Length: 454
Ligand SMILES: [Zn+2]
Image (cartoon, rainbow, N blue to C red; front, side, top):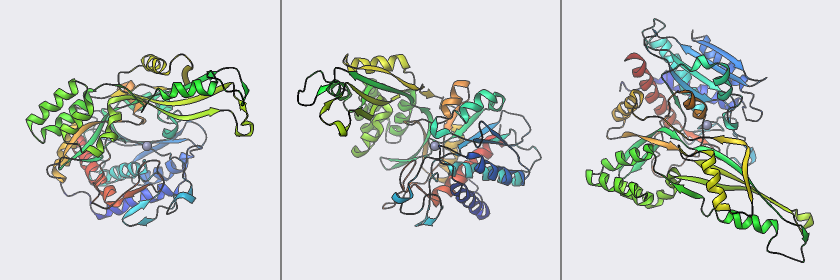
């Protein structure tokens, strides 16, 4: 690699990220237009086309395009402008001030995902300056900075996919969800998210006669519900090894030995996930964190029954809300069936508020993934890129179903021992500046190679 972008672009990316963090885009209400306007000014004054389209007042989505010769389909860089709430009382440094302490930039959105928006903006600005507007790029580079991802994207990516379908005639998109460094068995890997779990939220209701608290019964609604939710156990319901995770573990094991690869493959065929992770080289204490990537899961997140003001009254209804996450390939009907079998017949289990989206999987065999691997190997000798699944949900759910392959890849540097960060949605969310510059260098190089070499 050419050694990355120079100092000027590093201070530029930091300055843009700081400005973005200081623009309050907590969703709800979002108010993303303010951030979109700031970016539009930066881009248009450098001669890059940019426009804002609002799905509703204040809910701005920005599209910017650096034109290439049209020899190949565009590359899309995507990022959401909205963030989740932050209570300043809980934070060590104010969440919307973008202060720098201990080598980190502190603030809501610093890792989720205003850093990607800042990096992508600088990539467009740097390409415009360094490659120019002479169409030597073989394809357009498009930046799409959107509203409302944190609430499912109905005012953002979901809306754009319906209203501006022509924007999505692209080769692929780079998104959040990957780029995380993994140290396994002494070697370094970076994830590239090629798969993502789906979502299926449900509401569980138990009903029975109410009554006086002095006369307990086995058929009280609260107990029926308690028995049903207890059967969720630790929430890992039905296991399956996806193509993505099977490839990931094989690549990781191969770094150790051919023998380890064969062991891992054998264990995966038998569905022995924890043993396979261990055979691939994952440390015992990390196993729990990765288990969810091999199961349809359900977390009991909300419980409601009765009222402490009426502690002597047996409530006639008890309700639970369950956040379900599905592996790619699982259907809504299949998952509901799974929950109903587990939950038993003392409760009714129904979808909650239409909150369903299927899991996604794109092929990891793609030229851009190859380039990611090439660039990573050059800047971190011995390191490799592995396809990976994201247990959470991103705006990729709007794009993969219309045929856009989405790759989650915002490369971050592994922390040295003793250094700790805090990521998406956490109190004290902060980004290590080294990771910001590393992400910019790697992504610039990936974009450059993908758009120059066709
Ligand atoms: Zn995000």
